[in-house]
Image (cartoon, rainbow, N blue to C red; front, side):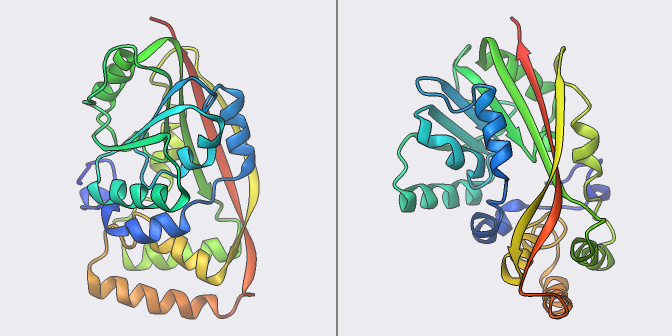
Length: 256
């Protein structure tokens, strides 16, 4: 995928990260899941669509409450990884489908709620908004989510600078934090909070590996170089640590 406003138009593909993404990116805090549930996401006997689902992180954490869930992603590799996880977890109320957000296979007024985590700025905005309007039920809830580590954290800052050094086109963070306040619908509300998320050296390395600036966009030689340098960098830190993150939640009641 190439987008003019992302990484100076450099190609990236999260499908290259699917194995690592499935293993290391399920890091959203409990407070986020509780907030989503308070907005009606995941409730029993509701129909919920997760757009840009990746490997299904958000649906997996709220599927236990009994919603009928559809989860879509443009990457076939991501959807295959999500299906494998669903089989391993013995979860049968999530249907994973390969689909973009702009043209989906669903009927009009299909969903009580629609979510988009870490992805809305990748969509063709106007077409995605029109599609959400079409497939959401009257007075349905749309939520977009963004979470990022904070550069005030020493470990995060060191890791961040190393990616940036080897991938100068990478434009991390700016798209997500800017997009969260670029409201696609009227009467939007935004809530934010900060939290500490625990990692080991392995899981933090995996989390950084499964990001747009590394495995999703680096060539093999550059990725190998980053991998060695990052593992070496982490040797100076404890085996277990916490990374400060900021979470943004924008939510809307869609009147039709």
